[in-house]
Image (cartoon, rainbow, N blue to C red; front, side, top):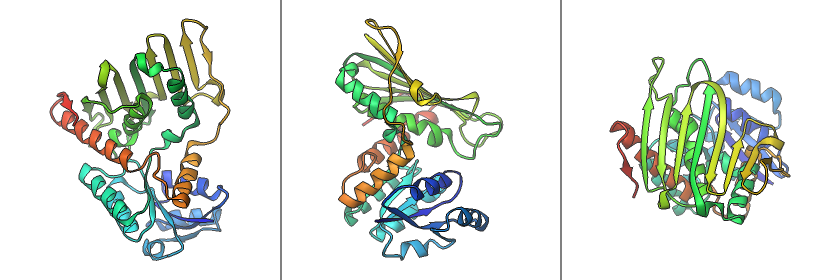
Length: 320
């Protein structure tokens, strides 16, 4: 039985509460939040979990093997550092940290403590993404890839108090590398703060990859609709992944030989469930996660380069 704890019972923390408590072979022993009302509400639904306002209850519990951190991005670094220092495996929601140095510090600490550090890059564990990744490798589609076009938007009347780069665009940053199978070599980014926002709520990003491949990323909090779409264009094949569709219509393929058709999905499990199961497996077998140290280092580096491009008005930044 793997024993986990959760720090942060807010919007995304609620999803972890529900997900982890439903996984066999796992006990969510503790959940922590500074908001007493949130704790009371959650305690009524999950009586098997202990709720606390004091993170020390989790950090000092030797039975807790792994800690999930789903708090505000600014608090991730210190919470993860404290948990890792106690020798506990840590799963941190994206963004793992808000600067590259802090990510590097956590990676070094986790290595020194010989423990698991994993990012909540949930879409890597999406069954549809796994299916697409397998198809790209099996059919060698990436060899003649032209570009990826990625759109991730929300239609909220009031944008959240977080930069759209960290909340939405980060998903397509790690997905572009995951699907293409190589690192980008340059980036151009432009963001805007509309409707009196103190954070970028709209952003356009171009990632350049070797051999002329390009990933175009658009993310917005203030769009007319929710979109979660990736269009992959190669010389002989075109593929669309629309995560807002039902399971049987998420992946659509176009090619010159056959008419367009939807790709059947045998696995319809929730990505967050698969992510948490993978976290447990990495703790049990002491394996490096798919979204582990290398993935964390990559995302921190790219976000750093994007931030430089934003600060320089969309200047092209080479990635080293």
